[in-house]
Image (cartoon, rainbow, N blue to C red; front, top):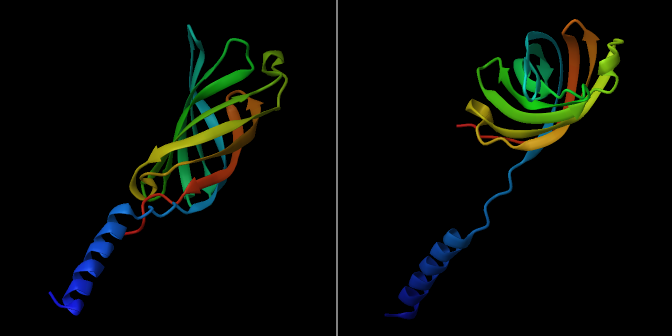
Length: 162
């Protein structure tokens, strides 16, 4: 084999090896924040605490207009809560998250009450497929199941556009 042919074979092998061992691209991190208002739609008493299902609607960065279903447990200490949520954007794409937090003063039932916590994005569908991220949440419980909420953090960009 001549020098030119030998160089071509080596270049091809190097190219294949670089492709095999290339470091994957780091997912782009973008702001994930929004605000919504909502209403409890179901409250039941269970062994682990007060099970609450709520519906909210609002707007968010990268989401646009959205609806959210929250499913969580308020512990019987009437301070700590934890659960999951599904946020559905106008195009039907969804973001799934787990959250936990505290609502000090809830046992006194003197409203409005501030609450706060953290969330972790655990996946999604559509344009949010493969999404990950985290952040903080805060809001106000106005009593009677009515609340407002805000969230702020970062998420990976999710699935690249087709």
